[in-house]
Image (cartoon, rainbow, N blue to C red; front, side, top):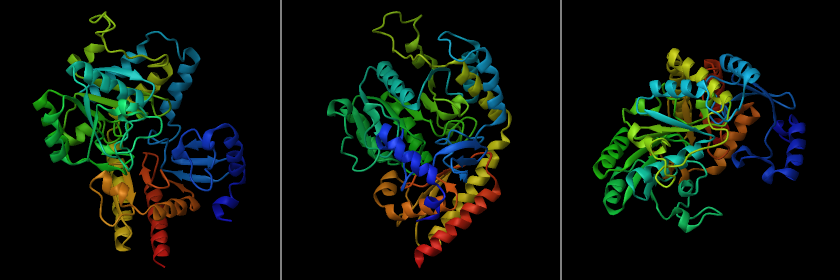
Length: 433
């Protein structure tokens, strides 16, 4: 029995119980790892405590939502205050205006915004908006880019890219055109052959392994959209407010027509998404201008922009805008981890790292991946799983077992980075034996 198994008997018991009630014993398949996941009892800063009393350094960090770490005091205090006076009322309130204004100030491409309950919803509505605005149907998306569970975009997330996921129909994806990531030439050859409504892209391919887009690729997409009158959609559910106060678009100096957000917009504590863009595009949602249901793009949700989420989101984004040194610190930690782990893996002939800012991807591939297809089809899955398990045995949790990634928060320290580097060195030396 491994150290992990011997130290987590209660988690093992809970997992067996969970399998009676939850398919696969979890509420999201990526949360399962062998032999069973540990069950969290408490979280604070960069640490997690499981039900057996073990303490882990957390790089899963709420699927990347916790940019300031768990239980960030200003956000928790805002939540405490708001709970006492109103959580969800189903009517307009001042917090939604304040959060919208805050986002508009931080992300200049967003002139108007609507809130949703997930990144999946945000991307769904962004695509619908692009189609309504252009009066066209086709959407280009890229291999390995993850935009949530919306049927029209839930294609080619992992290889084989041409195979549909269970429950999807050819009709659901017939207007979706899949192209290779970071390959502008493929897009150039395609845009004139279809009635293109929009291009949706992750500026950093998250599920694909933290593969950053090349600046010329994003710049080229912008120019091609302008050329054919299509809309450029940036999926910043991961990168929004994480790479900079203005997201990835600020880093890359490329302005999309529509941006989708998630995670951090709700203070990192609530289910949330958002999409926003140019006034002339977003006005298609305006019930005052378009009173006919068939002319107006629908968007809504019972819990959208609830008081608790928007108050928490406003508090966190205000902090991020005010304390810009946070990003310098995150970038420093990210570069340290990325460089040192990369050097260890390359020295031992095991693999490479990718990423940008506080996002770090680890790839057990024979060449450094510049596109998602390389990362996904050439990786050594067994080495990835063993690396994840070695981290786990050393009380470090990364995301996920076949695609190790590190989300770094402002609660992490240089000592935390040193520990991951040390554990990675141990793994690399043992693999070579």
